[in-house]
Length: 248
Ligand code: PGA
Image (cartoon, rainbow, N blue to C red; front, side):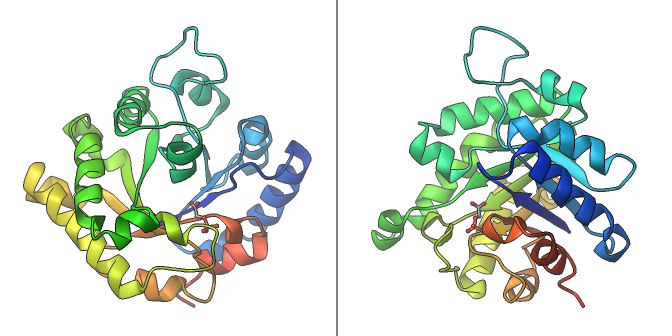
């Protein structure tokens, strides 16, 4: 199981150090779950320092595909790696909607990150209007296919796909666990078909969108959901720890 906290543009370096110290004190309670925090770039160093020696990993919120170059505002896998950051989110819907991330750039970023030694949480999901137009399956197929074609088979164990229906992000409206489970199943089927059965099992599928301590159990009960990408509720160490400890 993988539970990742996407902090978005929240928490300064000092707030990050405080959060990470609180999480570190609870490490023993975090069970055998892979726990990841994704602070803003400016807080990565503090997160890595405070969490050093724990099993809690620190990921960036995006990553460029080149190792260096004239790409103002971007950072590379090499740069993140030297900081002690072990992975990155790619193509979060906010990047797709507000910063012109496309299936094409998402694929480049996934490829660059995996080749650069990072783990990746790549986000897919339909918008409200796509959902209303009955296009959910087609949109997800297109998004997953774009990412799948760039993934080297040797790197599959470092790839997670997060299904995040855009209309459920930060809105308090979650997908029904049954629907999320069904869609995770479709994604799994697509991976099995296009990779091969065994490899399709290796990629972890996460659900994201208004996950909280009260609903996490219902999502995790679904066969094809292997974890969660948590936004708002990951900003508080107590709530985040409660989500990680959903089994209790
Ligand atoms: P949310 O965000 O949990 O606040 O809905 C999830 C995400 O954007 O990854």
